[in-house]
Image (cartoon, rainbow, N blue to C red):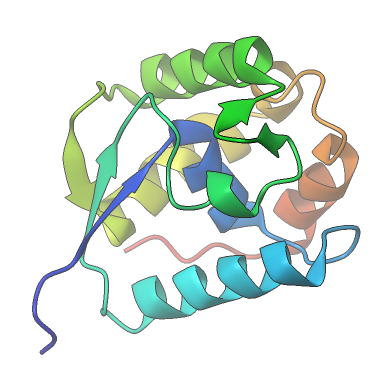
Length: 138
C-alpha cells in the first residue's frame, strides 16, 4: 500500500481524467494526464478533493495564462453542474473509484455531457470516448 496522497481537482478535470483521449492535446498536457490516471488506477492517489481554484492540471492547460484561466467563467459553470449532478460539494473528498462511479452514473450514462461541457472544444472527442468505453463500476 502506498502512503495516502490527496489530489485536489476541479470537478471538470475529474471528468476530463475519466474520458481522457490524448489526441489534440499538447504532449506536455497529455503526459500529465496519463501520469495522474496511472497514479489513480495504481492506487498511488487514493483520495480526490473537489476544489474551485486552479489545480495541478491547470498548470498544463493552454488556457492558463500566468495563473489565470482564460475560460474561468465557462469552467466554473461546468464545475457547478458536475458537483450538482453528482451530489458533491466543494471541499468534499472521495476515492477515485467513488468519483468515477458518480461521474459515470450521473453524467456519462445520463447523456448530459453536452450540457455539462457546453463550449468545450474537446466535447465531441470526449463524448465519443464515453460511447466507446465500457466502464466497470466498482
